[in-house]
Length: 515
Ligand SMILES: Cc1ncc(COP(=O)(O)O)c(C=O)c1O
Image (tube, rainbow, N blue to C red):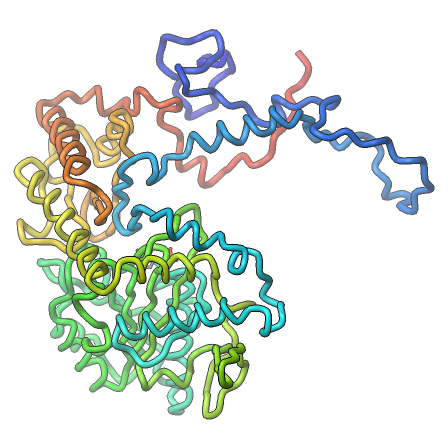
């Protein structure tokens, strides 16, 4: 079978639909070959003299022939990368409703600030006297995060949410060891709706996981936690708002029970964007919580990075925070490796965090102000509820019609007997020009569809999104199965074999044999 470029289709790839064009392009959607396919040995973007012959010292290691790198002129190379960049779906291009990921607008002001040479061009090993402004920014942001969360201390170095979990749990482990209970307290309670990084973190530091089931209403009950607590429990890792988009309403009672049992309360604060300015984790009894700066306070987020996951700590855990700390001597700031009375578990990472993320987060915080941050949380929740309420007559919600927090969760009961799955529905959204929502997560909900619109979207944007989903849902309910089963029909690539792509990725280009 040939695809529109006249190349044989890869296994698992369905040929793009007709009409095929001579170039393989679809309007301005340009087919892009690999650099190796468009490059040639005799082309180059630079004009340099041949080196004067010299005696090689490589001996038997000397290269025997050309290494086969593709040569391109500068415009060819530039166009290749620009065309590739246009294939990215981005928040700058349209609503990005990926639940649990908080894909929101990155104000250009933040980007401008992050690119200031005094922040963007510094090196972590520069003398402190030359990075005073950067250290002041880190300290100022740290103070703002402590104030917002109502906690006592903060570790700024974690480089993502999952890294923050590692940091917080290592502080908890160090605190338990300091109490002489390292050998006996080695279980972490994790609700079954948790993000996969939670149990992974516990396992990574040698603790075992005990699952706590959420109730029929999607909420973890204090009674359920009490039943799972024991003298072997080191901590609970609880996400709030949770991955079902619900506020853990029994959180205070859970914190009290956990503390009474001698354990610590780690809160996964990845969804802090729903409660900034509304609730303080410190007042809820949290001992450690990471904040995904790259979600709550903007920052381009995706592709595995970059990120920043500072961890706020309670007074009890503050002495165990990782080094280094920003300290001040008069007006001069420095990073200190050891602090008086510290029982730090040591360094978490090579340097002190992600400067670009710190600048963006502080710019977001300052430009919004306390009232603006609170409004952003309220608007994020309002947007999600608007979507939920506008779709609930067609699509089923696992926890009934009660209000959600920042993300609206649907299951696949409404598709029962239609022959259409959550995946088919998500793929059909691509034909409509939308990036699909998060699907099949959280795992506790069958055929989950998790939609997080964030506060960025206007009512007009939400309305169009809702109308599109309603139209698709009606088509599914009318039994227009074929549209869904073959979707996406209008994308340059159709459905790929995602399992094969994940398990047997082809990462190496092999030169085709001469015809
Ligand atoms: C609930 C929850 N916890 C933890 C994480 C991990 O954060 P990161 O991707 O920054 O490592 C995420 C990521 O989106 C999340 O949604």
